[in-house]
Image (tube, rainbow, N blue to C red):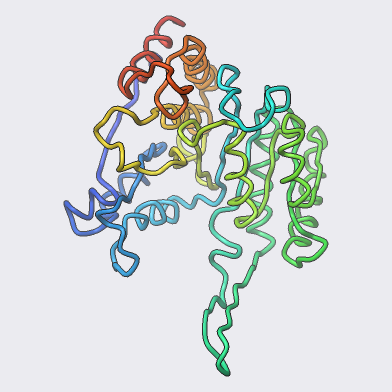
Length: 339
C-alpha cells in the first residue's frame, strides 16, 4: 500500500493481544511499548477472540490496546462516519437523508464515567445498589475540545459539542470550557447541543454535522449510532490522538479499525479490509501530515467500491463477492493508477 503511494516508510511490527499472550504470556510487552513510543505512529490491528474470552482472567487481550493508549498519552478518539456514495443502500436511513454524510466524531477517551471513582456494585439492607461516578477536570476537557477545533479548521469549520448541561454538572463544565475555547477560533462555528437532540438530528439531517466533540460515555453511544451512516462496521476507521508530536509535526497517534477480530470468519477471506485501509489514510493525514496521500487512499477505496467490488458484509443478497486479498489488491491497483 505505501509503495503504491511512493512513500519511503520504515515498517516495524510486533505481537499484541491474544497472539502476544500465546507467545509471551502477556498482552503487551515493555518492548512493544518502547517500539510504539519510538515510532511516528502506530497502525493497530485487533485483539481478542473466544480463546482468551475469560472475564476472570488476569491477562486479557484488551490490555494491549488500553496499555498502548496510556503509554502514548492518547486522550481523543476520532471516528469518521462517511457514507460512500455507492453503498448508500447499506444504511437503514433513506438515501436522500444519508447521501453526503461525512461526520468526524471526537470522543474523550481516558476519563469520565468509565474511569472515575467511586464505582461500586454492592448489597445493603437486603437490596442491591450500584453507583458510577462521572468526573472531569478543566484540563481534560480543554485538551479534547482544542483538538476538535484544530481539526475542524481542516474541514468545514463547524463544531457541535454534545452534552447534557441541563442536568449534569460535568456537562456544564464541558459547555463552559468549550465556549471559552471557541473564542480562540473565531473562524470556526461553535454549536453546543444536548446529546439526546443530536442523537435524533443525526438520523434526520446527518449532513448538517461536520465535527462533533463530546465526553467518553456520550461519545461511545453516538459513534455506535453513527455506524448507520457508513453502513457497516467494516468500513469505519478510528484514530486516537494526544498532545505528543512526532518529528513530522503530526500527532504520534494510534490508528485502528473499530471492528474486532471476527474469529468466526478467520482464514476464510471474508473480512472487509477497508476499515484498516481507511485507518491508514487517517495515519497519513494526522501523523505524517500528508493530506493529498490520505485523500488518494480514500479516493481509491471509493473507486473500487464504485466498480462494484464487495466483501460479503457490504454486498446485496446474491451479489458476487471478492475475497479480502482481492479487495485489498484492487485498492492498491487503483492507487497506482492515480500516479
